[in-house]
Structures are given as C-alpha cells and as structure tokens.
Image (tube, rainbow, N blue to C red; front, side):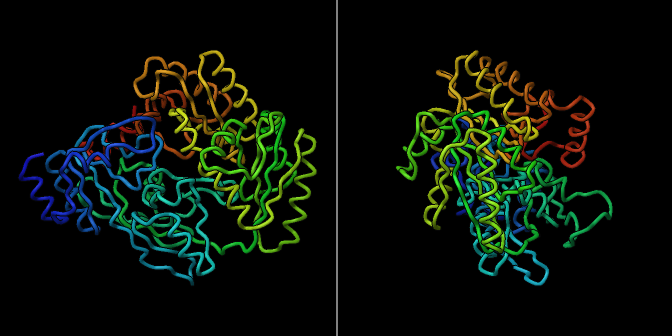
Length: 462
C-alpha cells in the first residue's frame, strides 16, 4: 500500500484507526475457519457511513481489494482477505440507533454484538430470534452477510426473515437504502434480500432495520439420550409430523458431548457408553401448563425411537448449563483437532440417511468425524479430523472426499451450506448444486454491482 493512500485513509478514519503493523494486522488475518491465514495490507476501522463511503471510494479509484469484517467468527472464510488489500472492520460502528416499540422494529449499525442487541430489546419485552452459537461475539453485520440462523431458526426463521431495510455502500462509494421499513413490500426487485447472505461481495451494510416480535415468557428444556444415532435423526422428523414445533431441536452425537463436557468441565449428565446421541428439545410460549403438556407428549412419542431416560431442566441454571454445552461444542471439537467443518442441510426427514452416509464416508476414507447441529432444520454440522490435513482449501486429498459428501447431500435434496455461507472454502463445490446458467447469473449480478471486483474478491463465485 502506497504511503499516499495510507495517509488518505488516515485522514478519513483517523490515524489511530488505520492499522499498519504486522503484529496488529495478524488479528484480522484469520477467523474460525479451519487453519487459514491471509494477512491484509491494511486494516481500517470507520465509525460512520460517511467514512465507509470515503474508504470504498478510495478502493474503487485505486482498484484495491476490500474485505469487510465483523466479529471474525465466520466458518467459511468469508471475511478473510484472500486477495490482500484492505480489511474494513465494522467493530466501531456499534450503536443501537433506535428501538421502535410501537412498530416492533430496531435500527442498528453493523458492529452491534448480537447478544447485546437481544438483551437490549428483551428489556423492553421484545425478541430478535436469530441465535448463532457465537452470539456473544459475532456482529449483526456478519449475521446479515451470512444469513445466520442458530437453534431458534427451527421455529422463528433466520436473519433474512427479520431484515426489513438496509443502508448499503456500493462498490463505487454510493449509498442506498434497499427497501422500506414496512412488513410488506413488492415495489420493484427485492434488493434487501439480495444483500442478505451476499457475504459482503455486493455492498457494505452500514445500517439495518430489523423486525422484532414479542418475547415469549416461558421456556422448557429437556435433553433426550438415544441408543442409536440414526434413531435420533428419525425422531426429529416424527416430532414435527406429530404437530409439534419446538423453539429449538438440537442434535449432539456422544463424541461431541464427551469432548465438550471435558472442555467446559461440565458434569450435568453422565456419559453413558450405550448412548450414541442426544437431542436438546426446547419449547417456548406464554402458558407454562400448555408447554408442560407439550413436553410430556413429545417425551411419550420419543419412546418409540429407543430413547433413554429424559433429563428435564429444572431451573434457569440447569438450562444454561445445557445450552453452554451445545454452544461450546464447535470450539471444543476444533481444539481436539477436528478443524474441517461442513455446514450441510437436507430436508429433515433425510437426516438419518445423511448421518449414515457421513459415518460410512469417514470409515472409507479414514477420517474421524463428529456430527452435531440444528436437527430441526435438517442442518448437520460435520467436523472432520484427518491426520496431516488441517484444512480443506486447495487440499488434493480432501477435495474428492468433500465432493463425494456434497454430492450425497445434493442427492438427498439438500445443499452445501445452511448458515455458514460459501465464502472461500465452499466455492469450488458450487457446481454440484447449481447448473452453469445459475452460476453465470450470480456472476453477472456481481459484475453489475461490483464491476472492478474489489468487494471481498475470490468468494462465492467459483
């Protein structure tokens, strides 16, 4: 980066917020994706839409790659500066601008931590349901970029279902609002939803207007052991077929639970050698008697699927302990060497077939595998540990294995990412789930909005 450009950026955001030393840039060179590292030339930390606009204008003029970064909790390499250039961190754009209680809306900047937003609106009796495991550190801007989900998605939907309107800085530095602060809008193309999930490749979100709903007043939680992993998968579909809609329905196979219990030093439940998987099932609402009857009926149903003794969380502390186990599983299994994570999703009734295929694939190709995830959505997180292969990017050993896995997912009616995004590491497999005309259309949209390919280059489009 030339000294003149660096100085120009300092004039825009302030000298303290242009990071140039290698030691400080290192913190922006990786995220939670495998063991990948791409060092940016510079990091800038703007604090307003106007500053973002000016930074983007410089990059557009000079043809400098620009990668937007939120909390750095991504799992597809979407915020890694693969082509070098500048990382634009939104960490200082962290204000909740307005909570509109009359219309059940909130306006936020992209650097607001998801859990901070949830707690702020909960204090007013309101609810922002998207609930990623990293909610204590991930940012709303990143949630929008990846269309994040989390456990609550099974009942309440994902981020796209709560985004009403976005302020976006385009690749040439111009600023637009994509829609309107209304619940229904068919006034032209849906630019708002085009931006959601686009991983910073089409524009930079600088403000978001999000829909809220009333917060449920009661939650009940139970943990159900199963002697057979596939039976646990079958039970998931059975719950919905019986007419129940849990607010969360999570799967953890026993290896995942064993690893995370060790890492968080939890002894809330014994690890039974005869158990292969657990389901965490939560229901919520405003009438505790109704919820209790629902839980009892679900428990009765599960006995047809070889379920063991059910643990009902008795209080807030016990519920928190169970959720801590689930939310910490990703970092725990990664610490144990399961560095490659795939974010597959199939129709929920096909989940047992996917689980069976994953286990068979691991045996055939000699890798260890741990499965967990949002079973109610059919969204299975697959963690792989193969000795000598800590990452999948451009890995000649892992590529054919993952192509086989994703082909199986597609055959089951699924796709290769449910909530982590395509980013850098999944783009080579897009041809499995999309025909050339679709990929060409995506490339044309990218070319129209970012003709010089400066916004998060090297992502999504193979």
